[in-house]
Length: 432
Image (tube, rainbow, N blue to C red; front, side, top):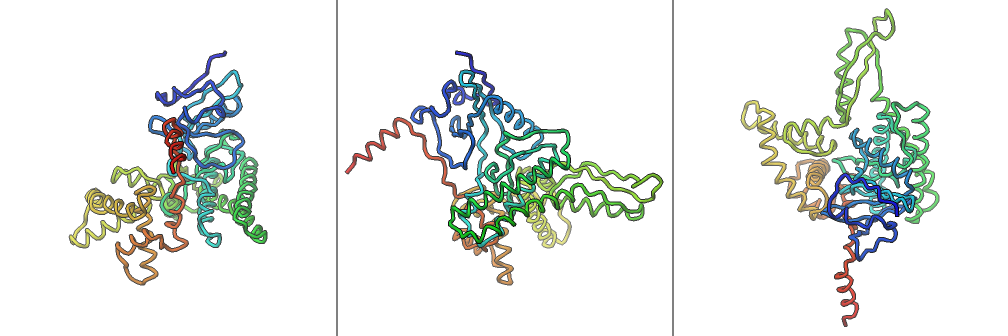
């Protein structure tokens, strides 16, 4: 038998002990800590294993394709792009197949899980999902990544403040180039629109919605291209202006910062030889502007969307401190007190209100949003207790981002079918 070709980036005892010489379909649930995790349709067999305190996704596919996908995922990780993280590749020479190992993305879910739990007459949540898809494709294209199979089924979503973060899951058809041509980008966008429309209609069929809704869903899917183009134009705009109007640079930078992008370099050059007009080019880096600012102040590692909300809460708290003290309060002092006196106890209360489900930071972001929305409705500050009660009873405004917490209530992995569990189940079945 040819030897195994095994590459594991996390060579833990549990992973090393798995029956890698056997086809993945033949792994015995009574001997291997397999977990049943809901996934969408896949071209290849995908199974999940929990070992060494972590959950791993294992996908069996042809050797050449597996090697290509592993290399692409490694490259995406090196570029800090939103994609699942590769953990290993095990080639099975006797089968001419390989098993790709990736880390399970905690607190993530497929689109079906959200949209099957949200009434179809609440399009705001579909719009958040489509915004996330467009944003993901822009991030990939800016880094020379042609996805080739952008679809709802090949994407995972996680909550990030008031928005969703989309994650690439399947990179079988992906290619990485120094730069994508406009034609390559258009082709990828066309694929995305077609696949998203198919996913939305498939979901409508499962929900037994009438065919009359299909044109609306197709139009919504088409809006992904518009969302993509709007964001792409902001990132690649090259406005021209006179030297006296160079104050406009600040406005362009502020707009990018509001979208969460870090500005790496600003270039001003003549628009044409001998022209007095200047052309502005802005080199944009990662979308971590607010997250980096919050980390610098507090040491917290959170998503960009969460950081934007938390920074607003911190600024409001700093303003209150200055009003009470009658003098300025430094950012460092305000951040330290806000973290200890506001954020940590607030996260604990908000997370308890939602039953300990999901991320405590996200629960606090939901609390802030719900308190603000309900106060707007009431015409006065409703206070913390009322907002926490609304979270606990799921009585939040239907279009609020907090409504998406329904997706956090996981169906969860089933327990491993150990010999002891099977013995206990058999005993229960025979009980009167």
